Image (cartoon, rainbow, N blue to C red; front, side, top):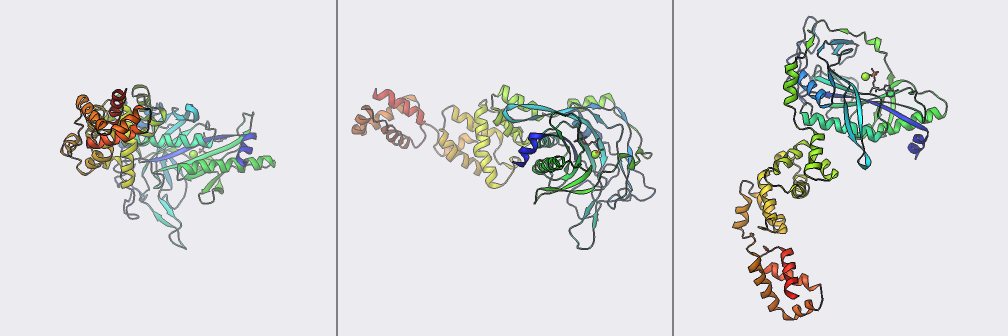
Length: 485
Ligand code: ADP
Ligand code: MG
């Protein structure tokens, strides 16, 4: 209610900075391994430790990743650029400066489409994406007296993605961060695991009275470690800032931190002015030039992106927006779905199997689709067997699918044959069977004829049993109707 009240008077203005740690073999400016989870300070060298006299060497893998992301986000790619030093002192930054990009980021402008309620969409415009390096990690909660420093992360390559101040609600922010994470994963350039810190968000937020267009003073909420917390921290800030303005107080321009258990933000430090960093061109690295050929090569090797798949799944496969989004959410699921469709044209059937029995199995075993034992071809065959009336849906679901899980290498058709689950009943001998069962139960047949509908179930049950469960209940129903009329 407080939030609703705040939103009835003030309009939030939100801009988000996302730091994405890149998946590369080595760090940004030296050969140290880029890896998560190694013992502290084992992935370091004189370069990442910032020893005097060492020289950085640029890891070109980063350019490919940055260009991929830039192209996927419709950015203008900068063709000639250099790195800059951003100077500050902190224990987890042994060099005393971060190598980053200031005036000439590798990508400018660009946008990403987000999906809102009622099938509405919105483009979130980006300001820039630049390349930089991560700092080490200060650990404050392992030792009661000391801060511990792990420099494994020092020099890990980052892309920083910055939006224009165009996000208006916490829900839009949630969708924005989700879409960026999905894209990073589709492009395979960052694993997007916010809990491990490989993707981190800073939220800038201010509010202004509705109807005004002069932005208010903003705060920056640092290092949010889940998408949910991005949303929660924004909602908290809107209310906090609205209260201040209601009381004619000022919002301090500052950096704040979010405490997940209490759902509150608190002040960390005053915002540094940019000139405090004394940016200047990095003298130890050569300027970078991106050749046309590289752009073309990267453009032509771009994988399918979530929004292209959405268009394809809804327009060509006829899936509902909901189904399409659920499947696209995880790249590996979307790719598995597409592989099934190489073997069957029943798009909806493939969706149902994937989101139904297959998803349940994955959840039960707590495994990913990449570890699912049955290949897409067998699932395609299974669907075709049902569509061709070779096996009933219920037998397929209750018997054949579990057996396929046990013997994933075997062809579903031969499993079904071996177990005599194949529907032996062609139209003619199913009719003979139905006739036979009706004849054996004359009283019930009479009652059915007299309109006692519940006897349909009685007969279907008997006939199914007589066919060893292989007959299609729908067909039996049709035949029953024909025969008694
Ligand atoms: P800094 O260098 O201090 O981080 P930037 O100009 O890079 O500042 O902006 C950081 C983010 O803050 C951007 O996403 C931008 O859209 C957003 N932003 C700028 N002004 C405001 C404002 N008044 N309210 C909310 N967000 C803002
Ligand atoms: Mg910033």
